[in-house]
Image (cartoon, rainbow, N blue to C red; front, side, top):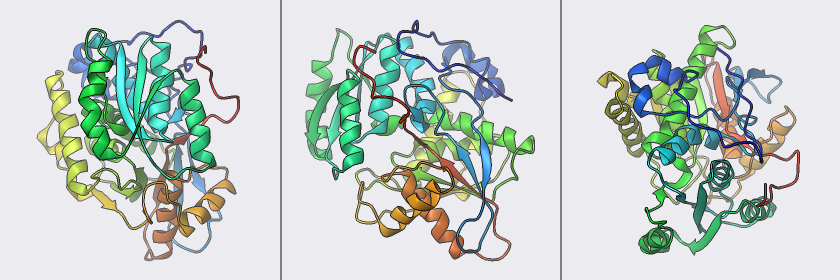
Length: 360
């Protein structure tokens, strides 16, 4: 199924949340439409293709490329915002308060898409290693119109959070959004993507993969994907490659997030089988490719960047390079008969134009 909806551009009228007619999740659970608004921000489905001539032997590898999903910024953050932003509107909030590191893709995507709806964004930023990638991202954040609070450490962010909430009351309190958009409602973005992937498999666009590899920076992408595949009747293993040591990102926390997303669906009117929450057998989390910590490159991630670039994939050094390093490294250790595997490319930069300015 293809839904080709133009992404919003600066100056366009603010889009309004619809009835979810083009959402696979709401087609599966139509009773949730009234209480669960959805706003399409990109063109679906995102393309899949095989990656050929990879170094060494091992399983066949495919990619589902989320990088072009969305308009002013792309990738997995946009999927989450398709559910988050209508929820902000539903609650009549004027400001989103969210969290991230200095180079946050989530904070930037939130600021850009919320701005199109007349919603302001404030971001509390913790430190990370600063390189050219992070400096460019900070320039984009400053140009986006978001209010930036440099809180430096997770502990200090937690301590000042009540003050930030009070500061951004207008008069209602701000909509508080966890780092990465990894709330239960944000997780629905990758439940939707899991259903989309299942439809592509059944349409013959790619073989059913044995494993899907995805970067884990805050958890919702991996948790939602595993839940969506299970809802589609597929028992594909999802390997979450942890790239962030600033948050608790273990199997238990991702399972909890998936359960909370399923329970949210029930509260909003969906008839959700309790079996859908039992994703433990098909969700795996590894810290093997993290290296020294968040934002710290590894020899394997640098090599993964080069290997991907030679095959037309633009990865980022913080998230997707480490996830693709896991694909390449575990492929070398695989056994005969393993595969095929799928890499979820979630990085979505926009390098085909100047950084957006606050005026749009």
